[in-house]
Image 1 (cartoon, rainbow, N blue to C red):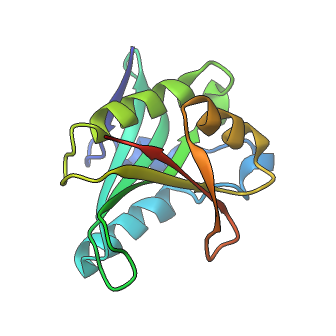
Image 2 (image 1 turned 180 degrees about the vertical axis):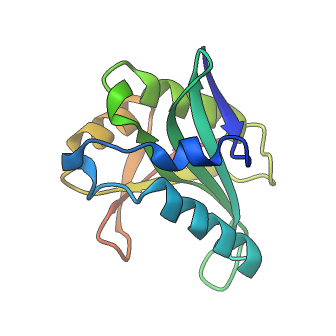
Length: 158
């Protein structure tokens, strides 16, 4: 059974030790960096970060970070984002990434931080595995490219 659990002092060290395969390191930031970014975003009120450890039958297998963005000068509607998805190299190829995304989408459809019509995600154009995963869940590319050169895709929540 796949579940998402909050990052706490009890599982923080284990979470930051998780790593993707070497050839995937350019596709995703380290979990330590992601958690640091979550702290900065929270303290600067840039967004509401929602970092989670991904567990499969009680074993931590990956990391997921979601975020909620309120409207601002450049964004007219609130949005949810999937900022990070990383399955540790030891656990890849078993469907845990898809299961974690399905759990994340279930969670987002409860609107934990407020209503939003869509969830967005971005990924490197050459990350074909991520592209296929997100498309299988119903994400469609918007035609936008973010500031980091990543393709942006979205999925309706309502």
